[in-house]
Image 1 (cartoon, rainbow, N blue to C red):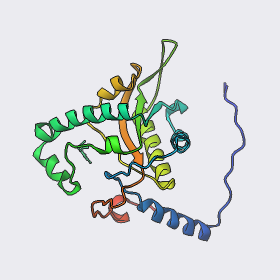
Image 2 (tube, protein in one colour):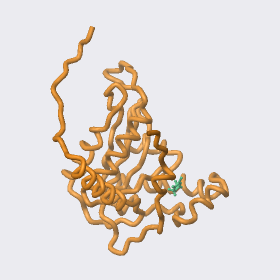
Image 3 (cartoon, protein in one colour):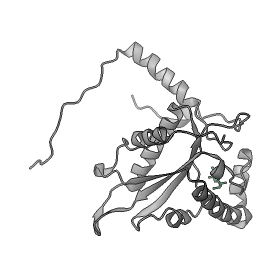
Image 4 (spheres, rainbow, N blue to C red):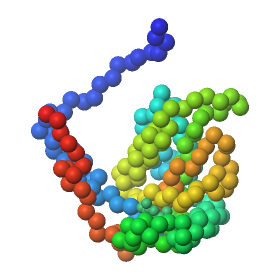
Length: 221
Ligand code: IYR
């Protein structure tokens, strides 16, 4: 028995040469995206953040459960609480919790325990994963939660880039303080903390290169 209903779906047909041009341009565009740590305090309209979240929420998810909540924080008091708690954890990370190898791997990025961007960026989007759903106290299952929320976060980063804004995929660890500060229900666990805004005028990024096609793919023809 099939109790779902289906509706027609199609995409505009694109000829191959036009497709090659289009996807080349898209690749060039995506290749401009960088993780930023130096934000301007310039404000971003709430309407933009709302649409970014709606774009993220179009991601595929296990059994279409959309097991995510995006908490968007612009309130300075709450951003301050988040910064203080994140810096407490990061201080411990940089002073003993992270291995020497890990610290060596991070050296090119110039990171340390100071996280002033958490107060400077106009918005912090905190992505929570819903380990299970809770409706009127009733537990229901979600599936492939990490995969689903990872995809939605990727869609979010891509939308942020499309908007001409920048972001950082930040994972202060452990992130449990976010549950308390943002008063999340028991079925939600923090997944990523993403400051969003404009880059600072004189912002810089590490001089990185990306792996080549040959390094990231294998073709079987
Ligand atoms: N969470 C720390 C450390 C850190 C870890 C990784 I892996 C990075 O790619 C970057 C940073 C911090 O945010 O500083």
